[in-house]
Structure formats: C-alpha cells, structure tokens
Length: 101
Image (tube, rainbow, N blue to C red; front, side, top):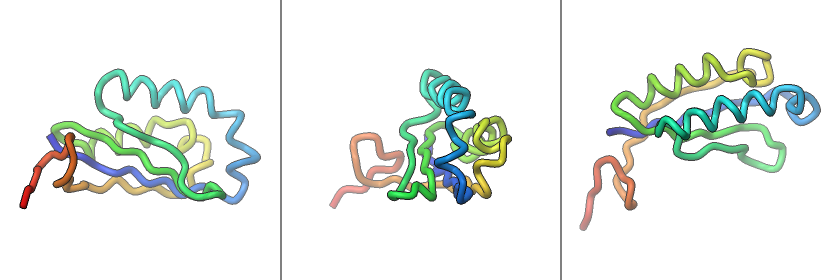
C-alpha cells in the first residue's frame, strides 16, 4: 500500500461557481471513500485556492489521477491545474512505511 496526494489549484471564480458542480463532485468523492481509495479531501486556505485529497492503494497515484480525470470540478474547468504525487508516509497509525526511532 502507498499514499498519494492530489492537489487542485482552483480558478479565481471557484467560490462563485462551485455550487453548480458540488453535489456531483461530492458523489464522486464519497464513492472513492466507499471503495477505500480516498482517505481525506478538502479545500486548503481561506480562499480557498487549493484542494488536497489523500489517496491510498497499491498504485495510489493512478487512483488519484483517475479520480481527477472524472471529477466534475476538473471536467467543468473549476480546477485550473492538478498534480498527483506519491507521498511516502512514515509516521502515524496508517503510515505506509512506518519508521520508528
């Protein structure tokens, strides 16, 4: 198992435009949670100007990329750019590669 972080950069009109797509976005997100792929997700900052979503699985980067490609926030253009990167987790109950002193 590994983790990945999916980072969204929202457009300037995100707060004004998201309501039209929010329900569909949340349906896709909760379905990923139910499949055990999405661990956490939400907006970052007081803008919000970014979103972060944490995935887990054998190929978490692929899961994150597949999620983004189907996410209504992305397909509608609310997300101006996104990146999916591996995250080497070493501390915590759910760390993929625990390292202890």
